[in-house]
Length: 340
Image (cartoon, rainbow, N blue to C red; front, side):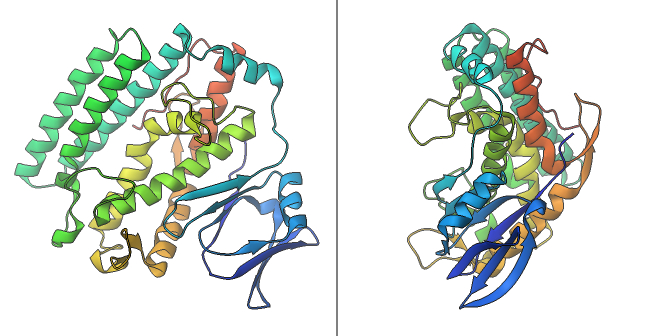
C-alpha cells in the first residue's frame, strides 16, 4: 500500500520555490523561510501569486510531485506533472468504456456510494441534535432511500444523472439541520457555486477543491486519465474522472469536515472577506482550514472493501487503484467507498 505523503500549500504572496540538494526551498523576500526534503512531499498546491523556477518544475516532474496553481479562494489555474505512470493498455480500456454499458455500471456504483454516504451523514447527525432537526434529517434520509432504489432500474447515464441531481437536492435541503450555530450568516440555505453566494457554500467549495486535487493526483499516480470521465461530460480542461470519483466522497470527507468546523466554531462568520466580488476565506482562516484538513487526512479508518486500516488521506488513492483493477479485469466491478 502506498504511504501517505504530505501536501505543501503555498499561501504567502511573493513566495518563490526552487530546489536544492533534493530539497524544496521556499523563499519570501529573498530570504529562505523553509526547506523540506522532496521525498516527503507528494503534491504542492499554490494558493497565491508566487513564482517557481523552470528547473524546479522539472524537479517536480522527475520526482512525481504534482504542482498546481490556484487563486486565493481555490479557483484552478493550471497543473504541472511529470511523465504519466501506468501503461497505455489501462488508458485504452478507460477510453473504450466511454458511452458503453460498462461505464453505466461504474457510474451507477459511484452514485450508489454517494447516496448511501449522504444518508449515513444525515442519520449520524440526527442522533445528536434537537428533536425537530432530527425529524427533518430522518425524513430526508428516507427520501434518499427512495432515490437509491431507483438506481437499479436506470438504463443509461442520463437517467442516473437525474437521480443524482434529485438526491443532491434532497440532501442539501437538510444541510442546515446539521449545523449548530447562532450566526445567521453561517447558515447554508441552498447550494450555490461559481461564485458561492454565502459563507458555508464558500467553505464547501474550498474543501471540494482540496479533495479534487487529491483525487486528480491519485488517478495520475495509478495511470488513469483524470480527464476521461463517464458521469461528468467531457470538456477540455475539466478533470471529469476526478470529479466522477469525488461524488461518493463529498459528503463523508468534505461535508462532515465543514460541519465540524462550523459546529466547533473553528470557522465563524468573521473569517470571511465580503468586500470583493465573491466571498472568500481570509488568509488566517484558509490556513486554519488547511491545517485541520491535513490533520483529518492522517486519521485512520478501516477501508470497507480492502479490509485494511488506512489513513483517510489515502481513500482517493485506494479508489483510483480499485478502478484501475476493474479496468484491468482483476475485479468484476468498481466498488464505491462506503463510509460506515
